[in-house]
Image (cartoon, rainbow, N blue to C red):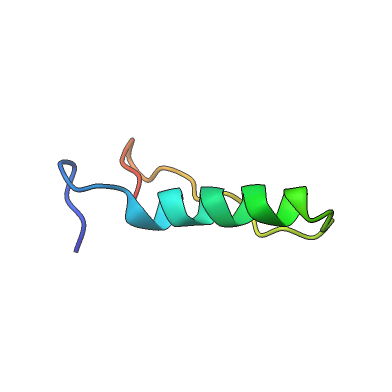
Length: 41
């Protein structure tokens, strides 16, 4: 499981996915991952 010192891989991947979808002109992109307790997972 993620710890505060782990890389936020899920958040990074979702951001890249959303950026690519927006570049392709898609309107319905998944929401960005929100921090839980100040930590991205």
